[in-house]
Image (cartoon, rainbow, N blue to C red; front, side, top):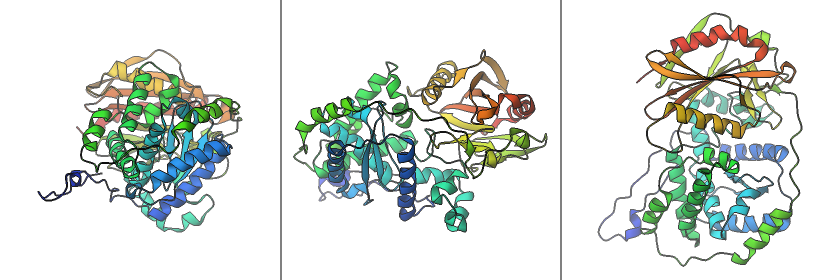
Length: 458
């Protein structure tokens, strides 16, 4: 997305110099489809996550949220606000307006303005339509026909249609993961939202900085937050710099006296139930196919994007586009849903980039370990399953790390997750090759062929 700098004449007030952020023009979804997708996604969240049924807590969050929604920078979406009983420090907003706030985040607050800051930040992702823009950029070929065709009339609606492209609501979903540029835009647009309605915008930056400092001490409750909110830079400085250009306001909180009571409500909530185990099912409908039905044929086709190229089995499918820095390659029928309803790849490969939280030059050893740590925070069942070793990929050195987790094909036991990492100039490239352990012998030739043909564009 590009920011628009308003032209300023000498006679125009100083606040006109503030950058105004607009949604990307590359978005195949209409605003109405954003809203519909948000409703469908929120319904799935309510089925799979422990939403708090406490009127005092919910009404308090809603009063703050509705105050923020009055800002012209909030995009005019029909926002809703709910609380999830989860000790992780996190919050997320779905396209079109549904927002969910973890109880762990409420427990970490110092004041009401900090909660307003997180909510304004998440609201900005909705207003700037970052989630559906991400999906559009990664599915330039499939999405126009899908959104305009009869498939949306099928069971599952827009969310079900996206499931066929491998887009779900898991931690790695394109609907909820953002670049550093998107995070910076959400910070600055969120600060404008706060200022519009009378909250101190600096408190958003102060709170995020506090959480980043806690994350450096390996606080496990911070893992998903830091993954979903990559640090875009010195938030306090650039939000404070923008504040100098904003119209002057008298900052007030709605109910500053209520935060201690809300923390008591959170502390008194019962522990959330653990999700029940559930047999995997195909994300495209029906039961998951037998792994032997989707083994690589031994024949290959080429994939080439602006970032990299490689060969993959001709009976598998590439989900992505040539302008994307990530791609999922798998038989369509092996995109399966786990017990939380998140779409996983049960048999195939994923290639993407990991941006180190520390910034600066990529370090292969350090950033590989950081990536594995974040993967394990998101999936506690993922573990190392052998000794990592150095490998040559063309002229570059990579690290091959054997990982393992329970297969979403429950009856087949363990899953092999072979992780390949390579240091690139701007990020850590990684590829995960996935198969049930019983199928690894059959899939290894395809793995070797893909690694042997992997090349980077620059």
